[in-house]
Length: 273
Image (cartoon, rainbow, N blue to C red):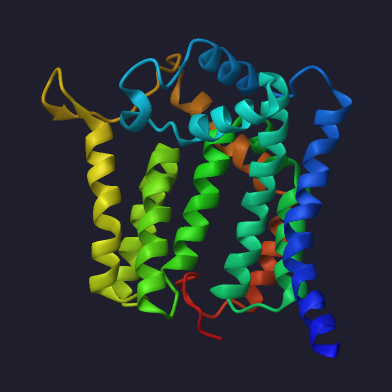
C-alpha cells in the first residue's frame, strides 16, 4: 500500500505538469465558444475544408503533421472549430509537459522545480499568445524538446527508436523547429554529450525528409522558405525587433538574473550537476 501511495505521488507531478497548462489554455476557448480564439484557427479550418493536405502531394512534402492529427480529432469530434479548440489546449499542455520532462530527465531537477517550469510556461502571456496562434510551431517545439530527451536515453535501442521517430515528426511538424533541432543535435554531436554513431543514424531519416521538403522540382535546387515584408528603414526594423524582445523577455529578466548566479555550464543541454 505504501509503495502504491508513493507511486501515486510520483505520478501527480507529471500529471499536474500537463493538466495545469491545459486548464489555463482552455479557459479562453470555453469563454469564446463557439468562436475561435486565434486567427490561425480559421486558417486551419479553411485549409481542412478544402481537403488539405490529402487533396495534393503535400502529405509528406509539406510540414503537415498537425493536419494529420487534426483530421483524426475531427473524425472523432465531428466539428472543425471544436477540433481546433481541443487541439489548441492539448498541444499547449504537451509543450509545457515536455518542458517538465526535459527538466527532470536532462537537467536532473527535482519534481517541484520541474513542475514550476511547466506551470510558468503554461501561464506566461507570451507562450499563451503563441499557443493561440501558432499551433504547428507549438507542436514542433514540443517534439523538439522530447527529441532532446530521447537523445539522452541510456538504453541504446530505446534511444535509437525514440530519437528517430521524434526527429522525423519534428521535421514533419514545423520548419523552424526542424532547423533548431538540427543545430542542437549538432552541438550534442560535437561535444560528445550523446553517442555519436547512434545520433547520426537516428537523425539521417529526418535530414532526408527535410531535404525532400526543401527540394524544388521546378528549379532542381533546395529552396529556403521566405516571407515577404514591407520595406522599412533599418531604424524601424531595429525598433521592431528590440521592442518584441522587451515585450517577450522584460518580465523574465529577474528570473534570468537569478539563473545566471547559479549557471555553471555553457551547454544547457548538459545533464551535469
